[in-house]
Image (cartoon, helix red, strand yellow):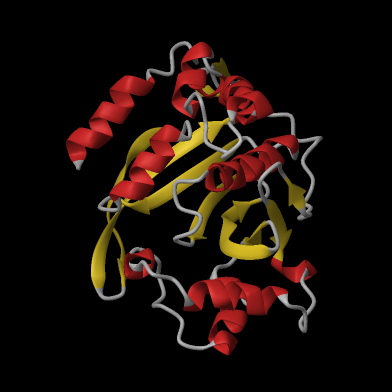
Amino acid sequence: MFDYQKTQINTLDQNTGVEVDTSDFEDLNPQQLNGRWVKLIPIQDIEPESNSFRSIWRTVERESNKGAWTYLPYPEFAFQVQLETALKSNFGFYHAQHYLIQVGHQFLGWIALLNIRQDDRVAEIGNIYFSDQMKQTTAATEAVYLLLQECFEQNFRKVEWRCDDLNEASVNAAVRLGFLYEGTLRQDRIVKGHNRNTACFSILDEEWIKLQQAFTDWLKQDNFNIERQQKIRLEEFMKLYPIIGRNDPENADQKKDAT
């Protein structure tokens, strides 16, 4: 039985969720996160006149995949100043922390923690822009892993992944990365004048113990050849560390059926 399923009886003979020790809860402390393939740099740590904003603008300006903007809540950027303003203002998201993704000497995207509920120790990984150069790469997977690792190291209890349920690439990524499908919020919001139903996924702290082992094994140097291509997929490592009782296949199939 998972912790979230456990109950206790209060003094009124009612069932409640188990008591949570909040003594280790502290404010999120954004810091640069360094992996083997990528660095995640908090926006507020970037100097206003640095080359970082010019680098990310060059990436956006050269983006060959126009579909990269379809499911994001803002249109493609026309000018560097628009992009800088959006980044510095967290794209208008409240309780959010954005990071630029550095691969080598280039900035190839951004990723964020959204809807940070400090008191509940819950955050959402979202507003992700992986440029065409980053999509379906080891760097993209490691960027998500670094944020997951950071959240759970700072005693977060749950990390969410929410996306338009028609965004097949995001839905598939969530399942591949170990997130569990929780359900779909119908008519959740209006994005660019269109209805959006939101598919919700999550990872709990007690599930992360096994998932982290899979990520760690997958990221080992001997799992990649000299061209940086993986030898064994992340999904295969996850099979080595099953989360008993989580029932991933059933939930994944439910999502696939729903789409």
